[in-house]
Figure 1 (cartoon, helix red, strand yellow):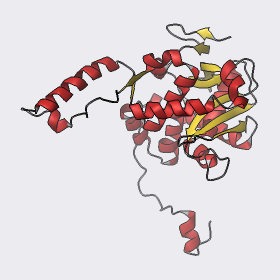
Figure 2 (cartoon, rainbow, N blue to C red; figure 1 turned 90 degrees about the vertical axis):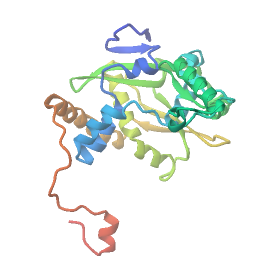
Figure 3 (cartoon, rainbow, N blue to C red; figure 1 turned 30 degrees about the horizontal axis):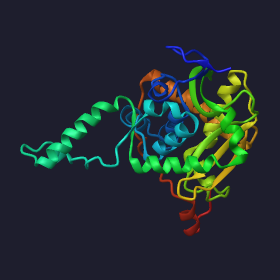
Figure 4 (cartoon, one colour; figure 1 turned 180 degrees about the vertical axis):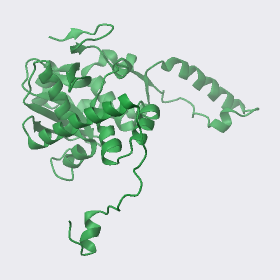
Length: 303
């Protein structure tokens, strides 16, 4: 059973830890590990990761906002006002920084500055979204609710936060659709292409590291004694008419196994750099690396 979130959540499954409260939990998550793999391991520039973590970690992109909107409207509509602050359709245009700092702004600019000053006071820790994005999210949810094959998933599964120890370190994950009654974990994705093809969702899966997400989430559940057969991605296209597909990634898939090795290595190396407070920039005097297509074009055999 899911339990209500305590002030300081312990190892286990928790319900009703959402938004900023989840982001404030001081545990490793899959997004941080994926960024470390990208910058610290593959790019070999730990300094870039340090700067990203300090300056950009909490930034939320429009695609992330849309996904969060769809999740909330579909699964937790009662939490909407707690998580989001919607810019009204008739809101005046936000003044530029130059207009904002002008000594003698026009009457219209002065009114707009007053409006946005009051608006910012009302935001608190909520995510700001535009009216058009909200309408898009509502349209997507409307399509999802008509998918009869998915209704049992939406009815019985709930959002949940898992906290467990992996590789000797406390880790966290925020699951879209978890239930004690299902053998699979489900995750809702809004994507430009829901087709199960190499250049469709397959490309999106590789680009955003959903294989790492799958391994990480399933391992947290295993550590809590809740084995699942794999991850089922409920993919809905962001553009009308919002076609829907369900694409699975089993726990014993070799891609998940490879991702498991990758994220476990990332935990150890990241925590070592943190313990040593060691964040070097690029290693200098390296032999050049060129793309495979360039090597082939130049007639050079891969060594």
